[in-house]
Image 1 (cartoon, rainbow, N blue to C red):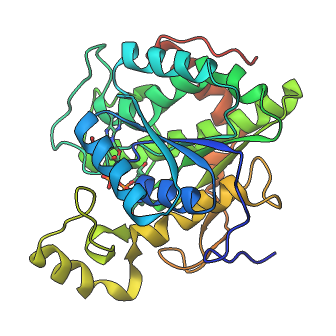
Image 2: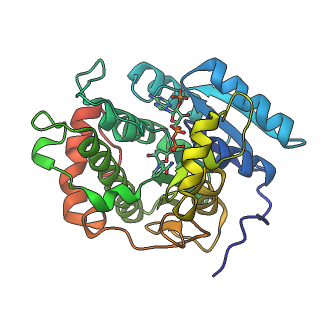
Length: 307
Ligand SMILES: NC(=O)c1ccc[n+]([C@@H]2O[C@H](COP(=O)([O-])OP(=O)(O)OC[C@H]3O[C@@H](n4cnc5c(N)ncnc54)[C@H](OP(=O)(O)O)[C@@H]3O)[C@@H](O)[C@H]2O)c1
């Protein structure tokens, strides 16, 4: 079935929480959902950047219902406080796991728990957040968890025997591995939710190749230099703006025809309208998902409440 990103269904009455929503794909996911009438919660690590994004949405979307919530996905205290705050809410219709380290450090860095930083940011923090906040979603009929994967999952390998890249770290291995793990988490979560009978769907998406130089300028949110705009525009044939990159997560949140376990991305792989698209065999593999799960539990220090 088709989907018109310019004409979204009414999302009035729904609450959607988006991690890393002060910039990039996360910001535009929040803005588009606010325009559709959802109450959006921007879960961000920097209060000033979060407020700039809240103000931008209020400026650009008349009658937007929007608020910020503190969340640093590499800080367990912050994750636990955010999960607690979600459990206090009347409803959480969707949780979009978007925050990400997209320009990983050249040399291996760790968070304060000793976990490799890219894995920590792109996977472990979200794993811990979902594990703790799940009752808020199960209590909201038809709720959704949307995980941001990547085309990079097609260009790498997940090393379960060296998940933390203690041997042979490169920034590319860290990024592609983290995105394979994120997708495998999203698909395994769907299998476990189905097996438990919970009315929560886990959907995985990717935004193609979305660059800030091809994205509208917004004060406090997206202000690329002229040089960046020039460079990014040279790649216009195969890239899109982050506003267009947000169409896949927005569809995953709103389209009643999309179900748990599905994968959405741009029609032309790197750009285009959000459509159903094939995910790699590795990230879909139940065997890999089952082996990855306890490793994520151990690294995040968090048992997951679904068997
Ligand atoms: N753009 C693409 O072409 C592309 C392609 C494939 C997948 N993706 C995925 O899409 C997602 C968004 O990417 P993007 O291009 O929009 O990236 P981006 O513009 O760099 O935005 C990343 C967002 O994540 C936040 N973030 C980073 N570390 C965080 C932490 N520890 N705690 C909380 N928030 C944190 C950033 O906040 P700060 O401003 O505080 O740093 C920012 O809001 C990522 O998961 C990425 O892997 C993007």
